[in-house]
Length: 265
Image 1 (cartoon, rainbow, N blue to C red):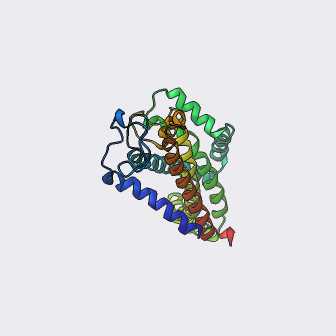
Image 2: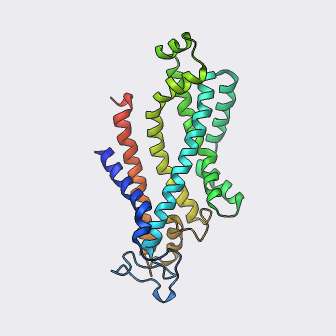
Image 3: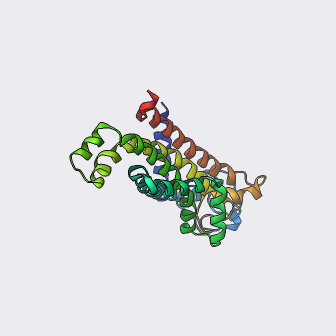
């Protein structure tokens, strides 16, 4: 049930991000000051903001931005964490010691505060600065997960047999160990998508995320806090979008864990 609900919610928002811009008639950058703070109606389903911009257009384009940034960040973190965790777990020794101390240093700082500090240091809001800031700490959880799984898997008979047959380390890793990591990495990625969306929206809310001319749920939510009385729709709809997408990925992660994690059975 959780898996189906999660897939349904995530797929719906992904579809909104992909084809939604084809269905809205206005640009999220259009300004119509004579139409400021209009309530939801047939002409503006989500109403308008303080610039007279159609909130539905911002919501649709913002979904695309949030999903794209989250997918890219999680993919980069997964790749870096897989490589670093594999080196630490498979080869051990000094590699393992140095890498794990680096991971401990990353976990020693409050995650979002470190992301916030990096975004603030970079000063100029841009997609690159958001992605870079979110990748500073995200890889560490994957590295620790991959290392632990490899320490467990490399004692298994099929890995010992592969060593005995003279297979190269690269072949053993990519052909025998990595396929067995896909399930836990997929589960971890689902939960990390949720946390990345929250982090990206928080940065945009604080003005440290995407550029001002890029539609974003977090930016709209931040702008709407000044007009909660005049136009509550400015905060309501992006807030609901963030909540639904985070809920969807958490349900997806729980569902995948129930189906793929052998320790759950």
